[in-house]
Length: 268
Image (tube, rainbow, N blue to C red; front, side):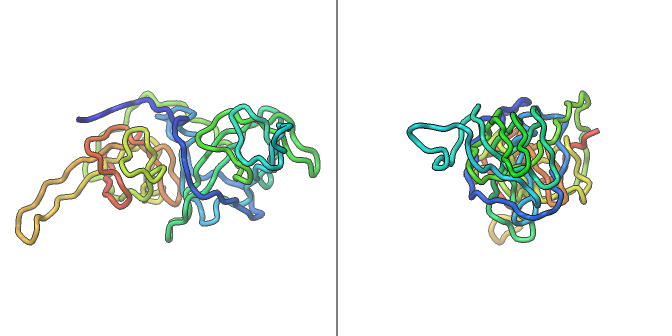
């Protein structure tokens, strides 16, 4: 049975991966553009490839502003929606009340590809720190677990949806799935996937790829099994290292790293 959706709930995802913190002195950058066909929450939650070690110049979550009589603040490492936390700002960044940042963790490094940055939540600044003082921010969105020592970067502005749908194309570029959110065995609609195709291949936000099984020979004979469509995904972020897409239509439960994907519709 085919399942198709056009609206997603990215906040429902729970990502589990190894936490790592990026260092460095370079100006922090949020790589890639965000799709005009996704909600702000889906854009904010979209994982993406960055360099091994994560984004340079990132800030970090350094503690909680909530003091408990039962558990000392310094002993808590997981924080809740609505909780106020202390952060250090990314290199070169300034903060005023109301400014937004996102927290993230890093997935395992991929050879020659870098690491996937997995957003875990959105923070809104309550009080900017002065001098060496940490900045106070409130957790206003969660996509996973916001934890002590996770990285902090400026939140990119959401892009409004385009009224023009992608146009079908023939003989689009062929790539493959590089990564699947949550290392899911049977990912389906609403899951993020990372494709190897990048901005260098002309991929743009809003493009759609068809994930498929290529024609396959049966044994050593001449019989060939025809191509089978597995799913359709829509690109929500593009970087120099790859692209991130949401599964919007699935025919077969066979989305996994290494499976082929072909550009099937081009964004305006």
